[in-house]
Length: 194
Image 1: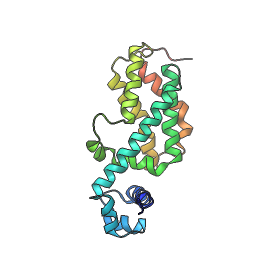
Image 2 (image 1 turned 45 degrees about the horizontal axis):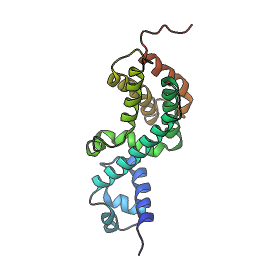
Image 3 (image 1 turned 90 degrees about the vertical axis):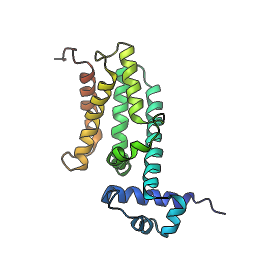
């Protein structure tokens, strides 16, 4: 008996492409089945609803990316190096897999509600990094939640601008500038370098 992994992979690939191109709401189960080359009933054998498919795609990929960021952070010494590595990895992910990155970005508000609070996620990884930087005295900003939000804005707004054609890809060409801006945001009292 077949285990269905190949079919599920086709469903995932079709769903990512359609959700990014058309939007989740505008993509029907019929669209998904046609794009995956399967019958609608086959899709329902894997997922009870389109919402379940979105939740599974989001949660599994979001957690996998969090694991990658966690591993990367352990390979760096010092907050500033870990921060720069995190920014570089987020931008590399954007450039190497833009469809998946856009899916995660565009459905996050909808999908995060179904992700358990204790599940691995990139925002928690970043928050832990900033919190550790505060505890170790490596940054002057003392509110880790605010620091996390500022870094997310500095990283995700350029990615969003690329999605809407307001900034030209690749995002990785901005890695050094954004990492430096993140550092400055977390150290507002540090004198700028001449």
